[in-house]
Length: 150
Image 1 (cartoon, rainbow, N blue to C red):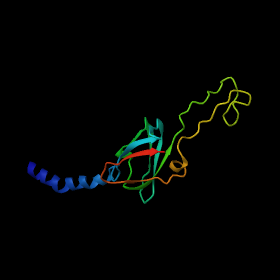
Image 2 (cartoon, rainbow, N blue to C red; image 1 turned 45 degrees about the vertical axis):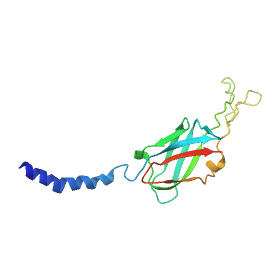
Image 3 (cartoon, helix red, strand yellow; image 1 turned 120 degrees about the horizontal axis):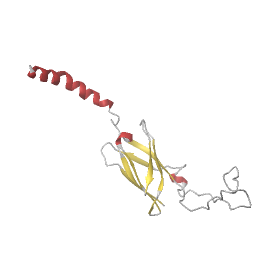
Image 4 (tube, rainbow, N blue to C red; image 1 turned 90 degrees about the vertical axis):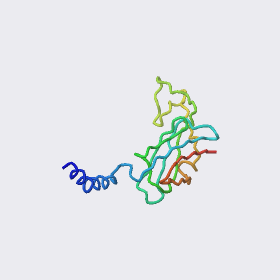
């Protein structure tokens, strides 16, 4: 009797369970990781975006922490070519707004007060809005990308 149950599972149950594995959320996705530096120094914080350039159904964004990023395979990318964009502030220290002075519509303190200096982006347009930077994500890893922005 036990033998018949085992044979029945092997003939019917096992093929069904294998067939269901295609519904796995990570099926076809791979993790990516790497680092971003600007002029040789790690970019302290920012975001790396991966936008599909072929017929992939995936895109991803990763937050930079200490210059490093990581996207797990659960949230990863399908193999193919992706456009890469990097965004971040300059990390500079602007003057803090005076809480006792009203702000203008642009968010700065009104004229005659200590104005807040706007932070300038430290990422050149060829890595941001006008990026043409591309990477090839492969099914067989590792998919580690280190970007050094000059």
